[in-house]
Length: 148
Image (tube, rainbow, N blue to C red; front, side, top):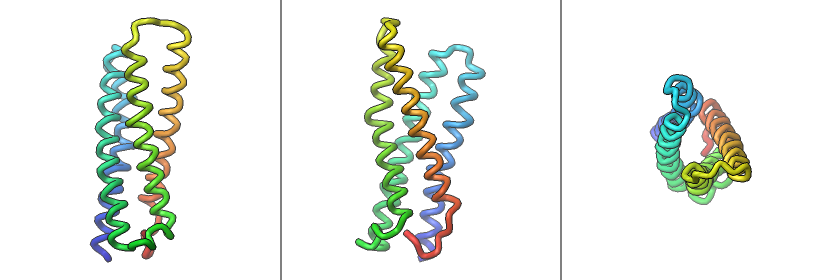
């Protein structure tokens, strides 16, 4: 039991720490120091892709280990549902929003509709990222009292 809790804490800390370090430190620093907004945006996209892959891997291991440890009872714990929500939001971010933003960036037209679409997807992405970051923080700082 103790090993499971320690492993969960380590994986959560890795995932959530990378979310916070990339989203709230590395990416803003890239935009502040690189000087070229296109270069900084492309770099940010690569960082977000990496943190999403890491998150999906950590999330999958955590969900599977929760089922192994608790069986069907895993669904009774709030931590399981928060973790599942984080994984689903990360999938939406990495499989839908990031590709859409990348596709819009490839367009050479500076049409107002395209710029508005980019702005919309960017705002949605920022909000989803914030939600995932806060959910992860709640998991990291919450008590592990025999919960999943």
